[in-house]
Image 1 (tube, rainbow, N blue to C red):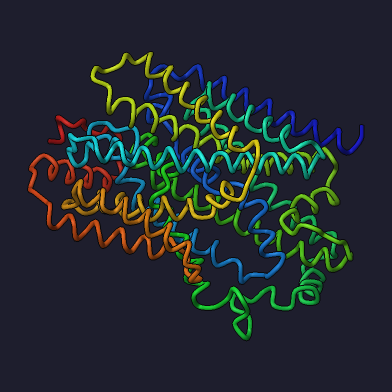
Image 2: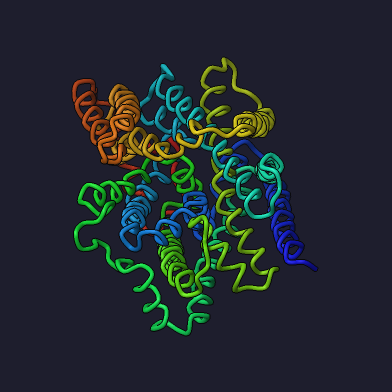
Length: 506
């Protein structure tokens, strides 16, 4: 067998396993809540690895190693910021959100939780937040499909369109039938594949170079400032503003719907502690592996004199020269896993926004449970088709949106989620002001080219608007206050497993 045949075989096996997992999950989806939230049955392992895999995307396997390869550890500040943000997200948001979403009307989406939390009978908050999610994530999914097409084009020489459609079709297949549970279970496999590849590849490269000492020497020759977080002379990208901007990425975690929905799907608020430990262990090991791939890759390329045209392919290149073709094919599959895990998670969130937050909000009669399940699957199909159509002809506007989508969600939803969980006086008007103010600030700031990541000013503006407007519009509500206290107590109880419904809470 040729090297290309081995690699294609590995990728084909990976695709088959993903579809099989989706079919398995479909047999456990008996209701609309099962399809969109796995019936709140996710175990800590599944919730933790699913949140991590759906979070990192191709940036972990290609973007971060490539940046480290070019500039060294100075590019690791964003990884530090994300690690801090992820830890705080698991520590603060996960247990409280799991408890509060069930106490407050058994909400299965973020927009429906916000509507229940504030008793918003106008549906304005639910509709607005649902539309924001739907629009941003449709383009985000499209960008992921573009990445899949480019990956196949670069790795196997196929046409861009063939690769894009293949990634879209396989991801759609297991998400369409498996729903949230299918996406979460495939995330577990994909997350483990990503972490293993990022740890094994640099270890093999170090051994090939003759050990740690020889690797460090080659690194110092090829990348003199590679081990400095802040190189002498404050090189470009290492200024205080750049460091602050990189650390600010961590703020985005509080408002990412495809990540925090995993918290809502856990078995109980008490699951958050175990999930946090598992998730943070996976994240730290994966990020360290990605950084090591960039540094060791720089040493390997310098030592061997290889011409690496695209630094973001350093992990792929090392795997191909150091591993058997079948094994290197699994590394290629791990890169695909990083791309597809995010697409599948976002498809489910878009489906929930379309059906749960838009359709049900305007429907005059409660639809039958089976009809909701069918509509949920139809929503996945419709969003995937629209995203694929946008991805047929990739352009800068689609790919550019991914750059500030994290900031957009983090600045608009982040303050609203945090304040709704920890400040009982937040109101519907304050939340709407934060959603609008955060989004607009991110868009405007991104056009100013100030050098400061737009998430930080957007987050600050949204928080200020939420507090100021809420103070002027807050009216005491005994039921809201009781639910707030109940959710807080349950989130702090290590043994809490059964959350009382809204009638018991209020």
